[in-house]
Length: 436
Ligand code: EPZ
Image (cartoon, rainbow, N blue to C red; front, side, top):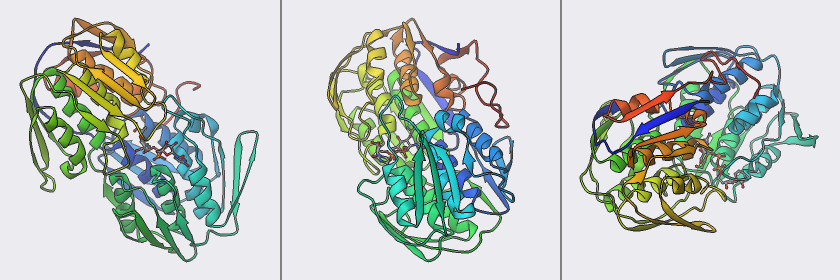
């Protein structure tokens, strides 16, 4: 059983670099499959979801090698167009490979990705976009079979700015015949990064960072080397960790402009923030002396407050001073961490899509269970503000998105460590080490 132990009530101080972005890396790895050649991605985070995606790319015939944080993908040959079910179950975002395989091979097969601990997570918008572009899709026994005579450029109007469905439509449109107009597109920075990578590869995408994307289909792409940006959600997690423990820190290697709404919450809670947005020299500096105040926050699609930082913020407010409220509007079941925070003494009331938090400091160290990636990180944050030792079990969820949360926080002076590391499901070459 993978566990993380946190000894609380130690102030933090120091400087760390932020890992590459998980949610930018995954669609970029999918984009590499569109090209019958080499794509090299730098600053790739060494996390379980990347290793899982490497396993999928290898299973369809790509060659992948990860040397340090540099991932080389050779997609010259595609040997099969079925995404193995065990990978899709482990990582539902791999469904975006359907559009890539339809664009490259005119067919794709994938298991219907299920829901997870944060919600049902349907893919109706993904399938709508692929059908609009000329794909026939049938479902048999939970398996999706998609075929096309050739993807056609079309007009796509999303009823909701789904990140994954936008990535799906963009990836499918790159090699389609004709032009595609995507309206109601998600505006998360990961979409902009994906489009910039694709344009580096020879795609023709305009409207980047807006909710209206225009993609002119091309016949081929070219070898490319690209740097993955820092992970804004990891940076926000560590920002809240410093606020929970008290102290000051400098976080390097991210784009502060992507965290505007998060900075607003930190300042409202009493933190002193400075940041610099110089290419290659960007940083955020956070300093806090008193306990953070409770505030009112609503999650929403970018540029709103990111749902992925909702549970880390809940943990911070639980150890704060005063009352706060969080309204979750993106996922319907994303308050699961509250139950575990209550075991640490947190006072949280959930009513439908709202969580009311009554700050309590210090919390008390106990044994708790991580149930998902960001909820697990939230429990680490709470442990930093708890008396005694907090033991976080099932911490393998955290390794999906955080390369080394213990090492990073230790570098800031936190007393936190892994205990009894399990054999992680995926090796660093993408082999699956156990049945999932
Ligand atoms: C991406 O998931 C991220 N994952 C999530 O991060 C993130 O929470 C989410 O975007 C929102 O920002 C990756 O990028 C790998 P959505 P995705 O499609 O694409 C509904 C993390 O912790 N919806 O924008 O699945 C859906 O049910 C993960 O790093 C439909 O109704 O998110 C949800 O309520 C967790 N139909 C809402 O849209 C669809 O076809 C947002 O989902 C698709 C989505």
